[in-house]
Image 1 (tube, rainbow, N blue to C red):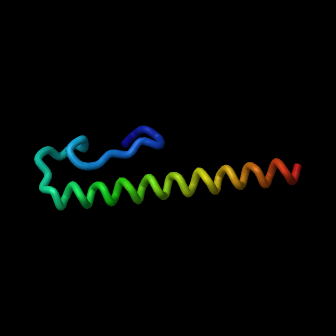
Image 2 (cartoon, rainbow, N blue to C red; image 1 turned 90 degrees about the horizontal axis):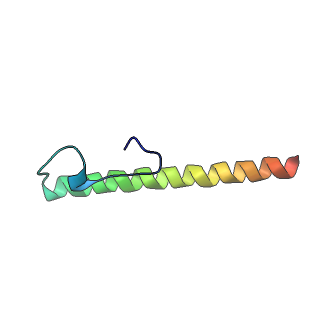
Length: 55
């Protein structure tokens, strides 16, 4: 979505009447995007903590 940290899949996306397999694929894409977002947040938090300790 256009909102940071908000992910969508299935019927709430722009294409109506998706077949179940397409919706499942969209769910997989959304879960991978959410996972990538969370990993980047953890890395960002660790980098911030490391630079605070160095200061």
